[in-house]
Length: 235
Image (cartoon, rainbow, N blue to C red; front, side, top):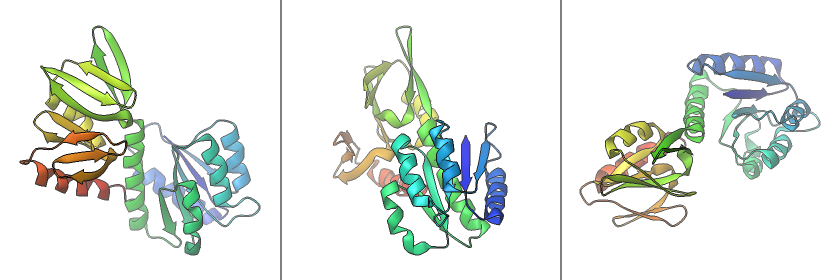
């Protein structure tokens, strides 16, 4: 996991670097790069060195944080951008770059931890995958592409943005692997990716692409409660 810290204040870069190391210590592949200007950040991006999480100041000389983020978004729409700035009035200016969050300077360690942990959850979601095996063929399927899966004649059918895939397994075994990524059982035979839920319509769950997934009356209250907990992890 590559984390970038871009701020023209040395003390802020040092503080963020220390906190990232502290709260991402479980990531053995952690790499942290510090930049003191938007120009340095853009040069790194142009060298095809993508970042997973970016802490980005707004007010910097020449290229400010928002302009730098716009250039980054041309090449990378998955980077988790967190603005760190004393200029909270510019939060609305940043929306075009699809930021994950906005931390106002000065910030407390508790505030940093709260937002960073949500960013780490998002990172895990974007980078998780499951191996789907069928008739001696194995497919490495990114978790974010799975809309839902269902049990059908003792087979699991995965409905994804790339099509349908089949595997012999139990709902319990697969759900145990996918639960940390936001999957929840909505019916005896159905499990949905809660990250893709757009709205609820009676006993139908409507996903962002219009797909409908059934929910049992018995589990409806539990599903709604779990969904409320789930979205609080990222907002």
